[in-house]
Amino acid sequence: MSLLETADLQARDEIVAIKKEQYAQSELIRSVKEECAKNKKELDASGIRIEGRVEQLERRFVGCDNKHDAHNKHRRQSDLEMATIATTLNETLAVNKQTQVTLSETQTALTELLTIVRAHAKTVDRTQKSYTTWDGVKEFFIYVAVLSAGLYGVKNVLDFFAP
Image (tube, helix red, strand yellow):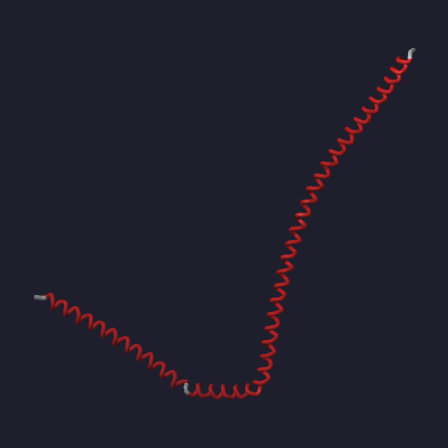
């Protein structure tokens, strides 16, 4: 065998070895590409889930902030109202302490007024009935006056058109 034939055989063996290595590398690349595609799909799916979860958490965060602000506003308003109530109550208690003495005097005066009103109840009742009677009589006279005026007007119209 000549040197060329020997080199040619050796080159063929190297070419076969390189082809086997290329085939193995292409298989490895294909399996890596398949695995990458699978991982990409999983990553995309988990990314969508994560984005949805993030949006959900952001909405909840905004809702919690709104509730917190509303609660603080309500608490401030309640504190202001309670302060107003406390001030009014303290003022009322101070006035009540000052008027405790005059309360018995007021009660005595009211009792005297009630006695006077009861004593004059018959007079008030009679006066009220008199006004009621007078109102009835007044209405009757107005009715008679209107009726008389109407009859007088009819008589004048008939006299005007009569020959």
